[in-house]
Length: 370
Ligand code: ADP
Ligand code: MN
Ligand code: MN
Ligand code: MN
Image 1 (spheres, protein in one colour):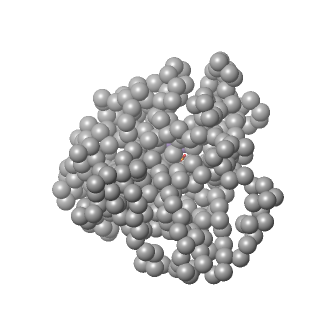
Image 2 (image 1 turned 180 degrees about the horizontal axis):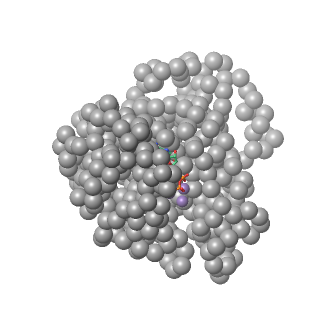
Image 3 (image 1 turned 45 degrees about the vertical axis):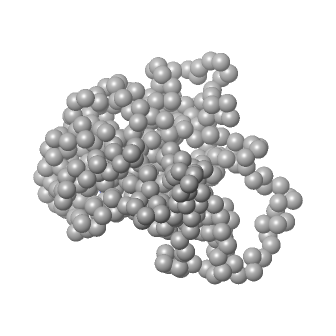
């Protein structure tokens, strides 16, 4: 058991069973100044049934790369809450968006702009399903379960693998799956990936801003569960050089029109629009993505846009079943595993639904570094 985890000892168990005397614990979770997650807990007087019952809170932004020391207060504005799978009972985990002292969204709060876009295009009822791939590392940053100083046998038997030596840490993955379902997240599935110790979970379909909220919370739960197993989670798009698959975050998209009979026409229109903004999208599709989008290992080239039915080597894939039925959704295979889903779903909405200000999300991304 790792030093970082709460060990489920008999001693601890005694305290976990104590009555909370009607009070609940709310664990506030936020995105920090490096694109990672942070959280802290607080006691509330009674059970929470709606988001407006949750107080705003704050933290020391100078300790999270989010504010200078002389003006360090950053405000946490609750945007969603879920049952807490760790503390259970009426305890909750709260997703909060970060705002500066002057009311402007904090660096890495890309939710603010994305939410505006989704509100403006509410009638299109845009749905997203994201496939979050990730890699397990041990405490020394070696790929979890790999032979010390060596490599496992080449890729082939690991994708959706079954049996010892083919899959690693199924217990962790199973625990995370259950924790997400308990929290009420729309996890549509899980699978082992092509590289050993690489896994995927899918969130969705979710409408608009909810996808970003749920994906961030699913990532938080993954870090927390993995903490107990003494395993680190890497969202790097190419954790290992060489003949090993990278990690992506395929983004499946549909609007109401695409889902109805004859929807293929609208899917084709969307792909046409996407082809014209390839470079702008790529900017928002994760850092170090050039290491992954090589045109090999089931990826397309970073510099050229392509699309095709059932083609896993293209930028955009139309699933075979969608082509057959003439309606449904499409898959953007370009986003890397380390994306901010608010940026990716935001620009997708902007491009596909036609824009109010078509360079909104790209500007939004540039704000981060200023
Ligand atoms: P793949 O074959 O690419 O591995 P997955 O089964 O891993 O596909 O993921 C497919 C994703 O597409 C799921 O997250 C699912 O929720 C999502 N999805 C299914 N239908 C739609 C739809 N109409 N609109 C958006 N996303 C959808
Ligand atoms: Mn998948
Ligand atoms: Mn995958
Ligand atoms: Mn996919």
